[in-house]
Length: 352
Image (cartoon, rainbow, N blue to C red; front, top):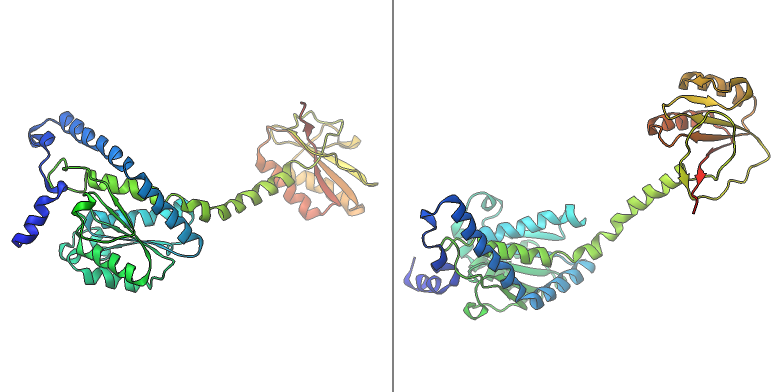
């Protein structure tokens, strides 16, 4: 390491010795845990001092995604891994496409698992990796660098500004120590690390908190459409289970479910009622079969005799609210095969 670089690093807060953890290597396990926990408590306070800048970044990202732009993270080492992690979490969490939020790490995919120290030292590589993604002015480029000086990240930010992209820079050293221009700088000085220079600790915690915020508002724009399948399911369930109002019908005693519904207007047709008890027995509410339990096979034989002579018959289903849904499904499948004029469910009204 040349003397100039050594002097630069020596000035960074993250590279200083932490006076509260000088003897951490000699401490017992509980003391180690307490010291690290005490240091981590300082991170949230440091982040809270930059909420204005973070909110600006949040709005930019949301606006970009709303018009078809992308959020592209660039970082090296732990910072790069955090960007990749956030991008990977967005599709399952918010329903984004994989290309809408992407993370680029110096050294490529291999650097996720094995440190690629030299890769981060090239501004040209950062610019080249951004160019591969074919950015345009609708994209937002977010650089992440705990030390604030990572050349790979600087190269990506500089190239993004040349293109006209909005840029965000997340770091854990004071902005006064930076030598980079970015549209928004989110500097969160967390002070010396528990272990000197180990920015995977407080610095990484602060960066993860910030990325969580930056990528949060996108759900407003990207997950509304995902509600539609749930609405479809609800409509299907409503059609199946809440069709009719009550009928006073004699037959097997079942406890009907209570629902709000409008009475079915009975057509001038014959009708038959099929009851399903709580234990799954089927009953035909006819004088000749009153209180006689049927299996699904026996029921099919009886219904075929009735419907073969007259398909213009309405079928009413009285299913006990405690019956297993599978028994109802068997009956519905059978009736679809036999094709009566209509199929209706009988329920009890909800009493206000």
